[in-house]
Length: 162
Image 1 (cartoon, rainbow, N blue to C red):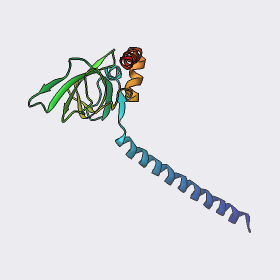
Image 2 (cartoon, rainbow, N blue to C red; image 1 turned 60 degrees about the horizontal axis):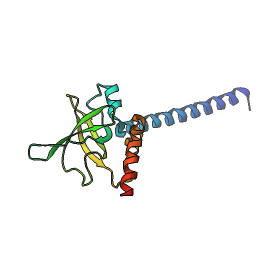
Image 3 (cartoon, helix red, strand yellow; image 1 turned 60 degrees about the vertical axis):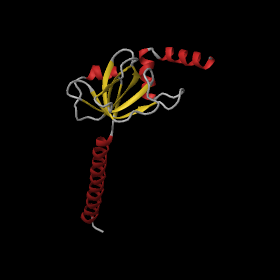
Image 4 (cartoon, rainbow, N blue to C red; image 1 turned 90 degrees about the vertical axis):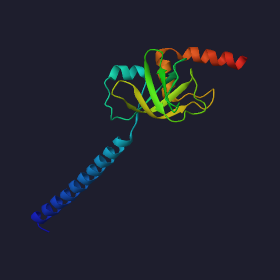
């Protein structure tokens, strides 16, 4: 076998390997682009205040505690507004639909939707905690950062004693 023929085969293998790497890279880029469209980021009210303004087309989740006395029914009662807080900042949420049975003021909630043009969060889905011991992890983390978590645990311990 001649030297030039061996170099030709090595070059050919190198082109095949480079083409395969390019194809794998292109497939990974397409997969990540498709995945990015379906990702929904979680924000606490404080993070929303810090990152404002947020693109109205971006889907996101907001979580925290529903402020006492903030629930208001609008129109025929199908649309409601309420305020979600992490004890440092708060966000007004508007939701059209039926709220979960376990939705209450003073309880943890996560709402999914987008920011409206007037700074109000427009929810397409509202998720409430499903028992007294559960709180969505995102909400719990934001409450721990604000220092309010200890008060919730003390209140839950008191309720369990009674």
